[in-house]
Image (cartoon, rainbow, N blue to C red; front, side):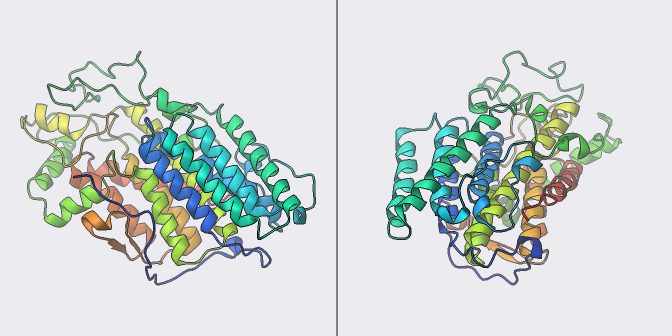
Length: 441
């Protein structure tokens, strides 16, 4: 039975909102965040239903979508700074006074344009949804602003989207949904797993899976050289000796797998984000949307939040995959079946087709949490309703707790060793710390 998830957020009470003064919105810019949320919810739907939009490809699209949203509004925000020159891009200038634009119309046009560009291969029904959302806001704007202000804004928003999309083509990930594997890379080691190098964990009669996105770690990041500057040290030295630290690490996971509680299984599946539901960055973005809705952020602050969050997601994925294909560590299922001799052992959720170290979910979740912490405060409690209909809601005392549970879920699911999760949480936090140094004012 296909799992259900919530994209329209119910009312949730949060304990706090502690925004840095760096992110306080300008007093004369109080457009509601509904437009930003609606476009990001559609983006979530598009990543869920467009072929090839796995977590990695989606991390990238959320990054560029968030930047597009913010840049389409930035000139209309007094005292704002463009993010683009800070992340290797070029700001798009305006040729009129900022009061000559109706800025929500700029954001609407920009998000429609960037969505069409990134999801050029999506279904006709999804393309119609992009048109429908854009048109719905266009009709609404007719009663809110002068026709010239709206048209000026539409032209500027489209210009922003075009400029950013053209820039995105040069980062190494363009149309990655068409190039998930490299036919020239069919195995990473000797193909046995006894060298400690990753091999496919799919079981017969299924064909062995190829390693996915082996070059992702070489993509251009938004924060220059972030993959290099956030690299963890190497994993434990591979060994098949039952007295070795490596064997003990795998045995910890195996022992846990034998006595999972109902809560353990729920955590593993809640954060599993398997195909047909949300992927990892879509889930993280849905958490951000819930916080934006329940804290009543305005359009400016919501756009900045989506931009910083998206930048963190993409850069975290690049950093994690740089690590993965540097060390190429095998997955627990390979070791448990072939070395510990439990051939029928399996994981709670399918093992992804890429090396184990570091744990990408931990890296991405920790980077996400660092952005949420900057915006909402380190001790802000919240409840995630994303899969409430299937697994119930998950409540957290802080955004850091969310990252820790998301990371640990991979140990409970049987697909990551605990040291890889710990290293991933540190790595993701380092990514997030660099992203929050970007200035929007």
